[in-house]
Image (cartoon, rainbow, N blue to C red; front, top):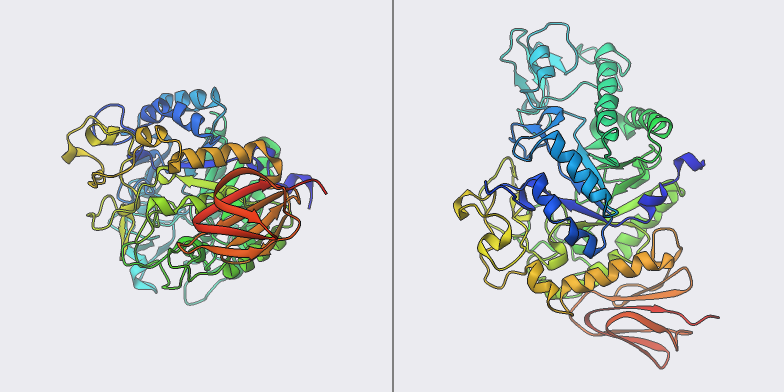
Length: 527
């Protein structure tokens, strides 16, 4: 694969941190997080060791879907501040060695976006997908209230009309289908480049692309969608070669060959991520498949599902990009959920931060914030039966009012603070040397100081499941036990290994012995 298709060097070395801006830090006391609040907390992120932050959509929106219903791609939503505040955030982050990535929503807009308002009242405008009759499936087609009448195709919620990037296949029974090179789809491609260029020029280092696989409709194998993104990548490589595209595709086997720098293992595509830390306890939502996961207290899971998916993704990527491994995100449960308490999740971080992936830490996971069940819908967080609001609660900074998130009255907060009196906070965790936060910080810094633990060094599995044992670069050994029972495995040629970060792991007598919920990272003796 050509050099232009390899991952950016900074991305290969990165540890990403995802911020849900509504819930991270409120600087003005209105109960909603904002960009100025993020600036105030950058020193914490620098202390933690993350070097790239990804913000969920912060563009102008009606917030019917938490900001994924964009009204203006070129303006920061007033609740978060202004474009000037975005510039201040980018500059302040850069001064601390932290890059800023935005979230791009290319597949649809809000129904209040000027593009849609124009199209809804202008026959012959094909920036969106229009039909003069209800099509199938009916739930995707929404009656138009504008002068042109008819119906528009929507993504997810009715307030999110789908932008028209064309159809890969024609159908004589559906005359509204346009080819990918029709005027409307081509206008949207140009607009997509314009939006990215606008923010690249202002210092944004890249985008995480929402539902990147879904742009071209009726596209078997996402062939035409892949062609679209290859053209975008060629433009980025020419004009903004130091900027990155991360796909929300959920299938790195497809998205990395389609020219994304990275893609995530996600809950909605395949079992790779769910086989690691999903546990179907009834308090984390219906995205669970009911199968045991590896980081389950009862130890009924296996690493085989993950390893199979990993090997397939690595082969398809062929060195051209990175598989991103998130602890959680705004759409599915946190690491701390169900029977898995914050005292049990350190081994999951040890795995994530020593595996040759792109690690992405969801805000608050590093202190053990829990998924909070039973919350009311907030700005579209309740999608069908998926209660996503449980992973979107405010960051817990200290033991002050509202856990230090905001000075607003509690009833004005974006979402409630975790009411558990034992909830973790950054301040309390920083004060305890053995806390989860302190362990995560040590793991991040160890990864950054040790090239063999990063994304580029080879990995070799020595023992699967409990404990999971592997080497990195033939120079370092990692041992992970994700369950509550002690476990052991035979291990030769490791006597004299130097411990770098060890909690409950011992190498002795030709075997490795692990306590429950333990991990160990060792430097192997030179051969």
